[in-house]
Image: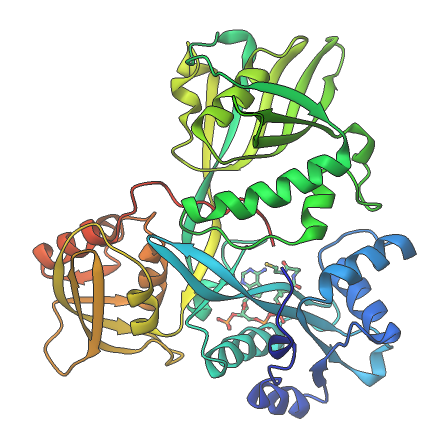
Length: 430
Ligand SMILES: CC(C)(COP(=O)(O)OP(=O)(O)OC[C@H]1O[C@@H](n2cnc3c(N)ncnc32)[C@H](O)[C@@H]1OP(=O)(O)O)[C@@H](O)C(=O)NCCC(=O)NCCS
């Protein structure tokens, strides 16, 4: 997705700029059109994530992806030309039940090991929240390296996903036959397929965001930075009319000393149930393969009902998509609902953005939200509101954990209303 020019010109947050200036640091846009800015940002980002220093070719590739983002570096003139901290953000559509919402995606949060624990990350995160709020964006999202960092800024784990390992020797295939056919594809076709299919399929699951070209090229084994690029294989599924409805990128690695292999799925993207069944059948029945693995699948992937032995599948559900509501009425009114409700909700937000008491009325699947002085029936924090927002985490689950207070009927009615039919999904890392 190309970020609109106005996203890159969202001004840097003056409050964070002031706070960091007080620490002797310069907080400013790292402009990808300027060689020195791009070099420093990309290399500091890689160092922050404990990656290898990118080759010149890999840096050039990354720079293309970063051009579509609003990149910020924090510079300490006594510490060389690379920034000592990085962050970037861009506007994207996120799918919600019944539609989509404007979201500010945040990535590349790093603080150099020489400058840690001085409040720099806090200045970066709060700066992104204020900048997104000032630009009128109601929701912020990120994926995390550590699950303990972001709730202090109001983020909740909202889109859990499943990591699946299938012991293919322990199971047979019981899925219904499909009328189309599978074909191997070359890598360029694979990248095109993945890009197009993701765009076509992302509206079917709450939590999905727009992809970008560099991501599909990397998945398809076209990235110069990818050490496994030459191992990548692709297959796609054509329906009975010959239209591509699904594609999968994967690698096969020998399991040491066994002459048998593990099929590691990089991504499966499908537009139809039939395409997903065809690709799973290819995986489960693959010759010389004892094990298949994949991450970032929806928690309701139908694969368990396609195999003869469900115990051959090990499922590990883990946090993946984190959300942070900034504008309560805009966020709640952007999605559709499964049940009626009429509840006064108190949202607590130490950073202020979402703080308030709201009357939430849901009828015929649509919500209206108004600020009110009425006594709240349900009280929850912005973390908890953000966690249930995509429809994947039941409010009742958070209430059982003591994280939501109030009248039990009101909590139950909101919990029912917010649940999405299909499990949310975020099929990409960012
Ligand atoms: C995580 C990271 C960005 C924190 O930077 P920092 O400037 O040292 O953080 P701050 O000094 O602003 O601390 C902010 C808060 O986060 C906490 N914190 C910092 N690092 C943390 C970590 N790894 N785990 C949990 N909490 C952490 C601090 O204790 C502090 O808490 P408080 O505000 O409640 O007192 C930095 O350690 C880093 O670059 N790590 C490697 C890259 C990475 O993991 N980035 C996150 C990508 S999703």
